[in-house]
Amino acid sequence: MKKAIALLLVLILSMALLSACGGGGDEFKGTWKGEDSNTSEVTFVFDGKGGLKYTGPFARNEAGTYTITGSKVDISVSTWDSVRSYTFSIKDNKMTLTAPEDQYYVGFDLAKK
Image 1 (tube, rainbow, N blue to C red):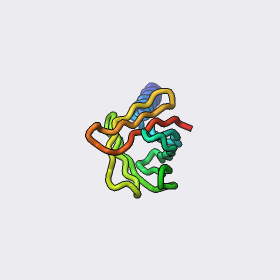
Image 2: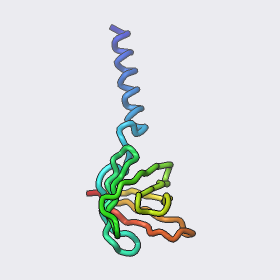
Image 3: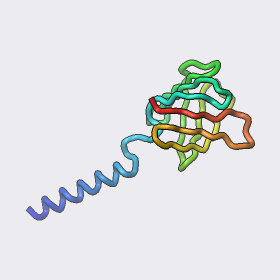
Image 4: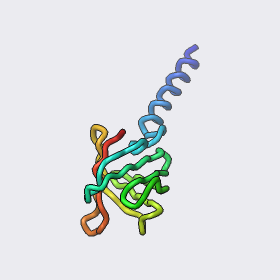
């Protein structure tokens, strides 16, 4: 009986650690709508597995990818000329993607839908 209880406690602790480490997806997962820094309407749909769809100026449901590392995200969309790196912050279902100052591309202010 004591072994069964100990095993159950180990199992519960393991599950708690896995969920705390983000084993169930990422904070980007879902649909985010808002504006870029040129006030154009945009939508990102992040799948939680590194894939996305982007709708914005001159693009409709364009396929892309994203990689999160700490507070930075690299985003690639098929109509963009290269991978774009952003610093991001998420608070209360609001996300800001800030482009580096030495880059020409736009940033984004988004809300989760």
